[in-house]
Image: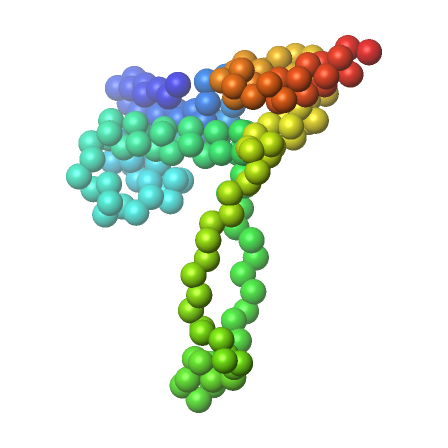
Length: 169
């Protein structure tokens, strides 16, 4: 899924974000391993000190896993890497960060119980993939990619089949 090519004068490292040809690729070409290594570290935003003991080969393996994870999170979960805009924090006045906070008799620290979604919503994310599929081939790719989910959830499988019927009309 990723590759390294060395022709004597230059080194090329290709990192793919997935298996398919249509997936995103990042290609780094330089005259030395050190130059390509620096480009890969900068491109992926990796802390240089954290990877200083890795060989170039080990670095490529690790950033390939990072690329695959990012690609999977975006494709499967609809995640985005672009951070939300940062809003300005109010200035702390008088050196007391707690100034102005009124507890009204309530503790400032509370415990929270995680919310567990109801069983019928456990695979709700996959229904979005069905809706986003505009062709039978796209819908088939959803099945191929998430076969274990569909085979373990009869409701999701029924919804997948229903979407297929809609698209075949």
